[in-house]
Length: 138
Image 1 (tube, rainbow, N blue to C red):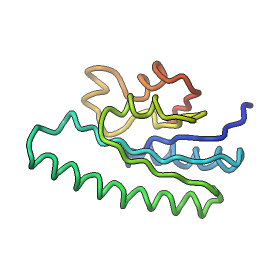
Image 2: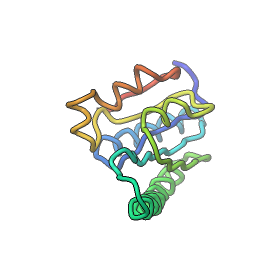
Image 3: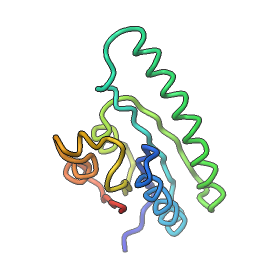
């Protein structure tokens, strides 16, 4: 089994991403690896204008607050180095272009069920476009 130094876990706060988070904790502990918790705010659903920028800022602040709880849980489980990244943009682009990642862990499905039907799941596209190992958790 390969050794991983930096494990990225995609968190959209869905049940599947929480399962992926717990699996990533186990892998990080086994490998004494850095765990990077990544939440991407998919801004394509926002319109243009000051209201939407303010809304995006509120969503980002709430997401940071929520993901801090995940960081505390990972630390309590024995992960020594936990990083947080909350970005705006395309989840596929952000997750597949993170520097230094050895493994990306994500849930099989997330909250964006319309995208799953129309253009294929985020998880599938991460597998297709990532240069790193990808673990899909069900």
